[in-house]
Figure 1 (spheres, helix red, strand yellow):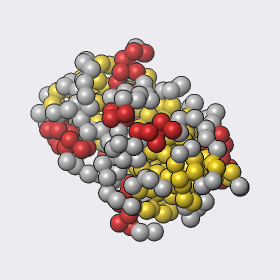
Figure 2 (cartoon, one colour; figure 1 turned 90 degrees about the vertical axis):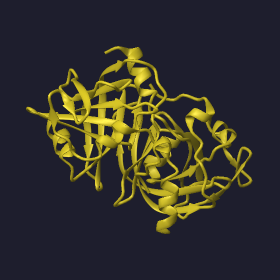
Figure 3 (cartoon, rainbow over the protein chains, first blue to last red; figure 1 turned 120 degrees about the vertical axis):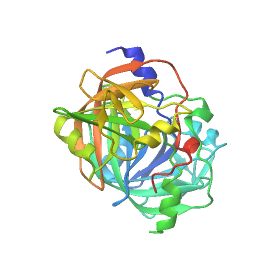
Length: 158
Length: 158
């Protein structure tokens, strides 16, 4: 296989950016992800690729719940704030306030919308696991155009 | 759960459009899909949501191979040509010529790039199955901006 062609072809898949929220016991964390797709209407399923060697991965695997805060155009700063682990403090992750979903996972307060999920599939086939979540709750604060990888200039794929 | 909020929130996930190619024995088919994400760098994995009651689904499940032809900006007509089943005839699906990948799956000749995959996971958890493909081949004809659901005005999700 032509590795360069593989990278170029896979980078043609467009993505949005999302803040994944996880909790386990009294711990919670958030991280920016882009490998996200819906995968069923009924039941409503989403798939997220989660890096295997991350704290987030361990937490979601144990607790079997997560949230996805949708980011909207203009919210690149939120995305870039959560590429690395940040500890929650005084109701905030870094500069950003969060609320707690019904499933216990943190949701970024400034996000235009979010979903909460229960893990119904967890497949460890590569350097990221394929995590399947059934949507159990959804909140919309406002309809918004999503933040895209194209807008941010970031690349994650290939 | 608020069904309307769920729909609105899930429709904030941005997507591209792709032509999925499948073959089984002497049969082959193509269909437009948008629920696609990469899911690992090493090995290179992609996830595709494939409608369970489709001919494509049966074919991929049996043959364990597929291709993804990336579509580029301006190629909405190709996407709309493959929402319904089309039989291959004289080297074309409808108006569009195809070639055959190394794994036997059809690839749209006008696509700027494509990948061929071997199925390494097939999870039937909803009305679409979560099909995990390991990328085994990739071809790039030209670098291009992807066709997005936003550009087409189509929606598939929620």
